[in-house]
Image (cartoon, rainbow, N blue to C red; front, side, top):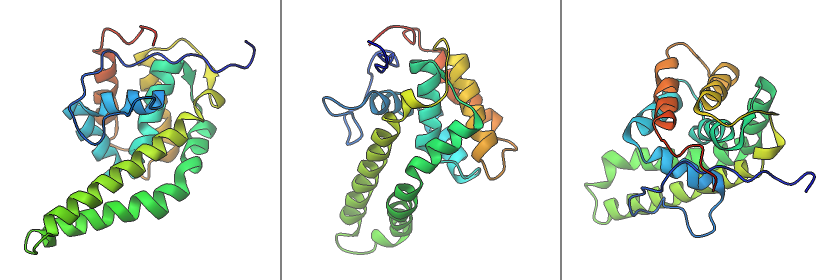
Length: 194
């Protein structure tokens, strides 16, 4: 069908630990991909460094990986800005403040009755907000970039594009970018259809 969204390729077998971040039945393809990829410790560390040191949105980074590895879409700088702008208000008004509250509570919560339980609830709400952001980016997937063959190399190129276009300081980001791409490339099922 002309104009139909291409069927995305999944990021290998689902090896998710039971948690509040596991994709729900019927979860968006990006959510499923991102949760499976982020479940790897090396990817978590790399994404958090890209967020905390370079000012990048982890979900936009995972979106770039997904569009390259699963959809076969080559992103340009304008596509990076489009993706970032699509979720900027949500990130700034919802996800960011929840993250700040959760982080602030880390040192304060343990000394208060019920503090740790409340922090856990804030964390769960923050994670749900992140998943909502992924779903918003999922709807953008087929609208950005140029058609190409899906691959881990394209995922790497897309993440580099995100860093170049959006990072407050791209210096030193390459090792983190390469770690994410290596995690994608190490999955032998990357080319299998969903």
